[in-house]
Image (cartoon, rainbow, N blue to C red; front, side):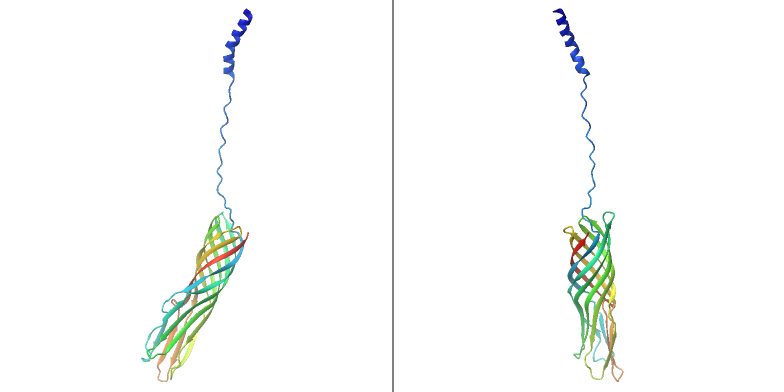
Length: 257
């Protein structure tokens, strides 16, 4: 009996110290979370082709002068009538996206354009002189450099422009005067502008683009003389002898990427 009592007492004394020797391990610290950068989900690299349509409009600059040594006909400036017209066509291009956001590419387009500039001068005696420049088609070959914000691309563009231009000038029949004309058709120049494209699906984008086009010198002269040595002449030009206009159009493109 004494042995049992001593054993129980010893067990009671030893149990707290044994429990103190049992160490409960601390839970491990959570691993640091890596924050991944937001990646581009849209690529602009690859071939693209599409269509565009919009409006072309010019500058009114009183660019035709009427001069004469015959006081009957007076001297003055032509009245300008610059008309806005439709422009539309197709384009093909290639873009390469690098450094994640920079897009470098090239595009060429060809367009039908219905835009013209008309000028007229009426003498005090009622004789009417006319000048007309009509653009039939417009094409460009341009480079473009842009910045991509995922599915939105903002860019600038510039390069060669070429066009078919018909220049027509006329003088009325005036007794005693013989008229000769001389001139050139503007057809080579440049286009510069900017635009924004939005990739609506993996392959289809829509955009808006503005271009300023200058086709160079577009001057024509008509001169008439009579037997007394009097002269009638007029010279047509546009914006300091350059044929220039603005274009705003909407675009749709299919991308092979």
